[in-house]
Length: 224
Length: 373
Image 1: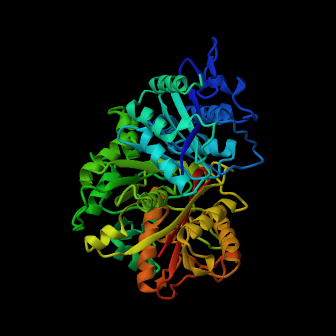
Image 2 (image 1 turned 180 degrees about the vertical axis):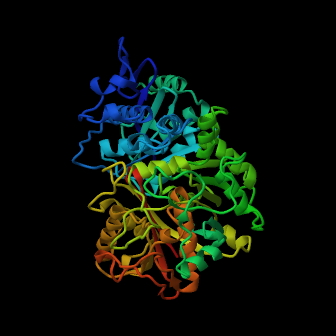
């Protein structure tokens, strides 16, 4: 089976976009991750967006852009045979601190369930699964060096073994996010092969650098 | 390529080793009791399953103490080329607690990458390592990925290590979700009302059958199939339709090349919460079409050990296969209507060479099912 990358969505401190469609939106003053739900990224209303923790907001936004880049529509009514693997250098550290600090400040008596639910590294992926109807395997994975290449290998195994028809694979580093959609189909709509993507993500950990290399790849392939 | 288990060990509140846990379960003994590790006055319950001899908020985190105890004196020689998969939900979260409570240290010390480095050092594995975290399915998901790596030929030796500990952090969180039973958890009981938090560490060395035979290893069992799914429904509650777990079970059966009829017994997640246990029984009834298969949960004996639960339950299921009996569901007094004739308060006999189905579920709607032969 040949594995293809069908779309890539990204977020940086300055804006958001996607690779195949060449979408690039620079934040205007006052815009940022907090306002993504109002900027037309989601094709379906995201009613709880304001209640999500930061990691979940970035994850669901990058996933929305990746699915859009891959030409895939979604609706809450129809669930899809797609899995998701994500990583981040921090895991749920920020939410852990928020939860426990709040608990301590409340005299170690009251703790907030709405903060606790984001203290799992996989919680952000769960929010994505719920909104986009992803019913395939879901897991957070991280190596010593947060390599996206290892995650692509794991996702490939899942697609090849038909554990899921498609996989979302991505990472979050501080205020930047990158998500890929991969599957086992090979046609002219694919952005690139898995090998091409793997070579790029193996060469650098920096998300801006990864995006730059994909732009070069698009030019080489005559897709720009 | 078959993925076979050649070594495993567990450390649970019932004691060190598989024997201690197995004997305790067979004796219908619970290790869940009133806790003294931290003040539980403000919480919904004061019950938990803790391992004796651990120092809380000392220099070494609870899970590292547990993992050291797990490997110390086990006589196990982990091959240097083994790839490591470390399964956990909260890892060294007690380090973060200490840092916030005392206002000293660095909260980032509790990161999962840090823990991974420590476990790589302790086990001497040089084949690369990865943390796998999928809520309370973390270690069954890691075992599934280990088996997948071997089946695909990407690895021929994977060490899966799992750990999670009882801390004020997780205890207060489960309390805030009103998920705790006031008394020791009663999985599948009519009067169950929540889970008991427990802690454990476990490891499993998984190899290709070819390598295991070449190295003349004793084969404990085969991870014959696996399925992972998501409900895509709710962050903390399971689907009322059970379709996610049914999908995972069916995927595991297909992966193993068997039918539901061939499954001899089920090691259920069985947390003791009303919703989880009802969801599981609905899934079993759907998958097994009312053919009553012996079902048990070990969480009345050791509590819900979170990210370590799957690996501990796999080890106990493999022991059940060897002994031709499944343990009782500890603390079961009166089986819930939908579980009558599936679960029992005493051990149940199973046939020789019975195939095991091990199920787990967790927050974010994750489900896993593993077929063990």
